[in-house]
Image (tube, rainbow, N blue to C red; front, top):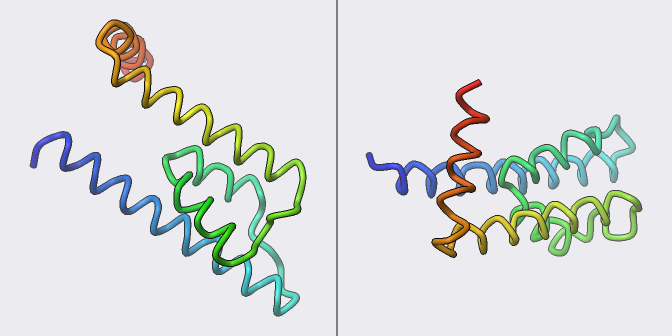
Length: 106
């Protein structure tokens, strides 16, 4: 399997997991049970699950008014969007990938 296929598979998986965890947290909130920590939800978004988090937030009406959670989620989405644009532009893609490779090599 090539890298692009693996990336697509990863992103699909992390977004499904993120949506499911948001849904589970919503169920727990309704039942009055112990909640999933916000740091866990934000970490899933940061790991690539931002679309799943944003869709869950809107579809499930979950954590839509909670601050600063909502602001952090939007910030993560903006960072991901900037990275996608930077990766799409050849003059920024190569230096960015070099830096990423150096970070991962540590």
